[in-house]
Image 1 (cartoon, one colour):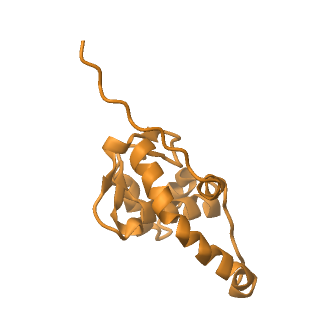
Image 2 (spheres, helix red, strand yellow):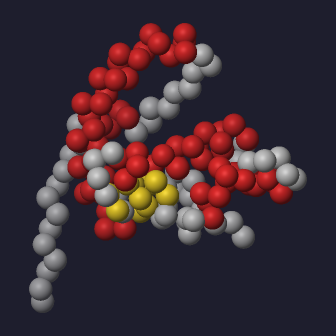
Image 3 (tube, rainbow, N blue to C red):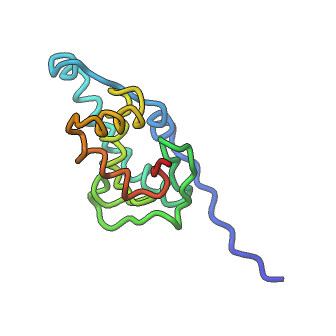
Length: 135
């Protein structure tokens, strides 16, 4: 019997682990400005985040589904624009997460769209993702 090669064990740094549950929102630039320097320093964690993503995959924030690393496409160094999983870019997920938080759920946003509230362009990203299709 031939065994698949083992993946090397990769342990994320404390800084990378801390990012997992780091969620912030600011009502104004004045509220955001005092933490800007600290947030910019987190950019040093990018390589560690990419290594963990390539080794473990990601959790889809809307469905909770694990997207394994082999199902991710990373097509360049601009990771907001080049990591694709289940048909969505990282930037699409971020925008949809904000919309979900703002409107209570993506279903509520879809209902607003159905009533002609003009949210169609933002919602269209869900149509391209098999994991996010409703119905």
